[in-house]
Image (cartoon, rainbow, N blue to C red; front, top):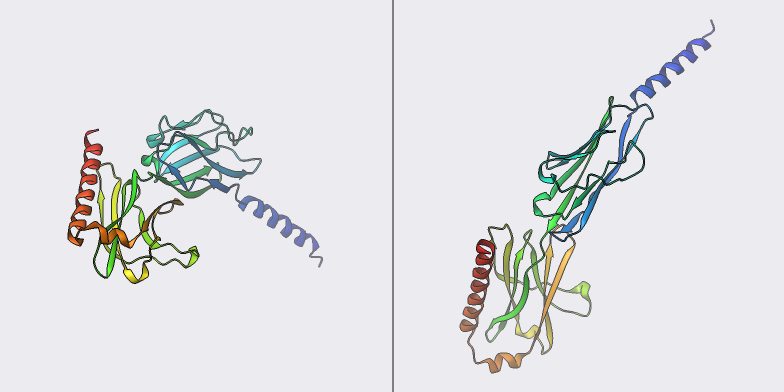
Length: 277
């Protein structure tokens, strides 16, 4: 018995099955900025690059922010924006000249803190769908960043680093500067505090202590501020001289109270600014 016709038929059926089960919609990648500065008067573009089969129909592209739909495009209709992105998207922006992908991307005007979060692009057709997710952080740089000597005794010297009105909550680290940056060692933190304003921004400070035997005249103490997940880094430094300690005539306690008064004053100013200005 000749089985050749059966084999040919089997191959044809397998090919047809494979074609029918192949995903018709596939998102290749999406572009979402990892971090942008709050209220910086710039626009950001979120792009959703996808592939379709020639016979795909009933195409729908949707963008979600924190699981809430904020953008929809149903070709050949005009795109729409909703919710947190209502009136914040350039609905005339064109990502390509292809009628099936021309409005796949969002051009967002002047991002602010309220539109930070998880962005999801979803692409639907009559037979299939696909989605991709990325996060965007919107940060507020510090209003002020200061480092100063905040007290001393016969054995140790204290340094304080203060950052005001930052979002999200920053990380502060103080260290003695070395020629070899990779071998720096952070100073031990002996005191710290964080306060959150009604605006959602943070003011924070740390106090670090260093033994005098590790300090020489001209030593550089640095404070590094980092905003998590944004790549934002800012640094301040102070030069240490022992003569300043000897000539100051101030006790460790009086210097401590001076620092506390300074911090309280800055917190009051920030509170008044955030609530009444």
